[in-house]
Amino acid sequence: MNLAFLLLLYPVLGLVGVGEDPISLLKNMSQGVLIVMLVTTVLFQWAVFLLNYGGAYTEGTGLAGLGFKRIRGLDFLWAGAFLLAANLILSGLAWLLAQVGLPMPGEIGLLIPSDPVGKVVWVGVSITAGICEETAFRGYLMTRLRLLGRFRSWLIPTIISAAAFGICHAYQGLPGFILLTVYGALFSLLYIRTRSLWPCIIAHFFQDFGALFFPQ
Image (cartoon, rainbow, N blue to C red):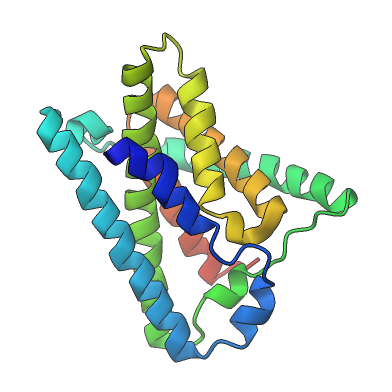
């Protein structure tokens, strides 16, 4: 059931609003409505986390089976190195997409509330995205796809989970889908290399948290 949700229903929710102009929608959205939307997103993602944890618990693996190993100082070093390399790659890809007429809409800055309470909510969004999305797409989806398909390599699980991750951000348009799919694949490589979910969670958190200071 969890795999069906992560492969079908969860990505489909990301298609809601595709074709609309996200910048116009966000510009016309009041701060109150924006905060409610962000809080709703946080609650939904934690519900998905509980679903995945429940699946892992039923399977007898628990959090360890999702990649939650003992956190180490090395995990922060991996996360920092990953952020530098990934952002260089994504910046180059974004430039190439812009050259062929597919620029990013640049609505990330509009997603961040301007008032102090809203900024605190954004920190919660960053923590939630780091933990819940990495658990869903790397910790659960990738590992279960590999087990279910009996794949010797991580190639197919990585492609499928990265595509599902990209579709969940399809509201950012085709450029957003392409960039986030590549980003998902890079996160998958980090997960495979470190065999731990913590570097992915830390990097994901700081990527979103950094938008408070460097909105795109």
